[in-house]
Length: 428
Picture 1 (cartoon, helix red, strand yellow):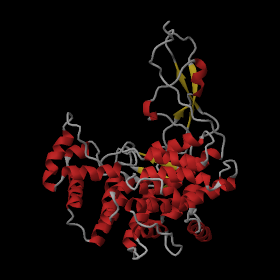
Picture 2 (cartoon, helix red, strand yellow):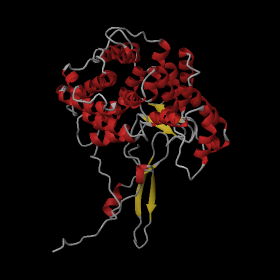
Picture 3 (cartoon, one colour):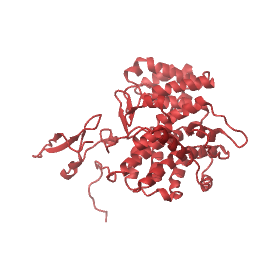
Picture 4 (cartoon, helix red, strand yellow):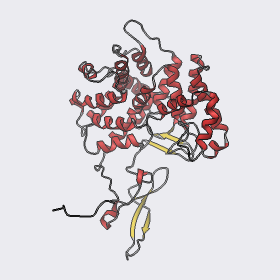
């Protein structure tokens, strides 16, 4: 946001003689914003349920143009990053603002690899959870608990502490995610291996056992790396805004990220790809798809086709285009094209891209639609989908938290339109 406001907006209010002048700021790209901060002193608040028209901060990390299907990380289009980069390089970019040199990349990867283990006492922490507990419930708890183990990196005013914390969170999230899965399965935890890449390591910790190793397919590892990459950041969404809001109180980064995980757990946010698979289970068969398409078109029917359309994108989600290609690569690698659930998904995809109703309303398949199909094909249970989303989103959360903490910031404090009782006396 520029320091000087080149333009002004004038707000005229009925019954008030003097209009209110509000500064207008321009970003490097995107719509201008009207600074309404001075309204409070005039006795007014703005009213914006869901904050759909409110910029809560300025940021240099991610830009989205939903109408044109554009997603930029530090200026780089997501399509180019998905084709030419990998997840850990994107993590470095989000955290540092620039792509790493070869030496910087090697040092960063080495640092992440050597932070993947967690304190052994955390193994006991898992015993407190029921084996039937949802993995996201476990992840919320254990990530918050990290602040009890790593006191040497919770000084939010120390840049070096913030850097160490970022590395620890990115490195340990796959380990904690895999441990959450193993706990539910009643299987022993598998330690991370420094000879494996980031996505390979996660898959190995998920599927290997002490009595049988797990050989990770390069195609599957690449698909998992892309899932992490495509979920790494998405501007001021509900969970990222939650991390910023929690962090604005001075909460340590582990607690702030745990708050983001809790927000991500909601089915309207991180649970969307899980909802896709639940929807396919409800449909039951390719033969039933026409019936459910008609239900989705009926305004009086509550049924919705999950995995199509997006709150921000009114065009094709650019992440979905990349994920579509990856999805087809995985299905070909695994030879599971005949799976009835995947057959339903592919038929829905075909209909959505051709049916006039979907095209007119711009209900294109989104990234959650394809990621859910990929994860199911790999053999990852539905309840782990949001955990994987959280793992991928970690660098975005910590980058936004660090960006806020690094400069002047205010504690978040939304206001309200009060519609309750006025003052009344307690009955005698």
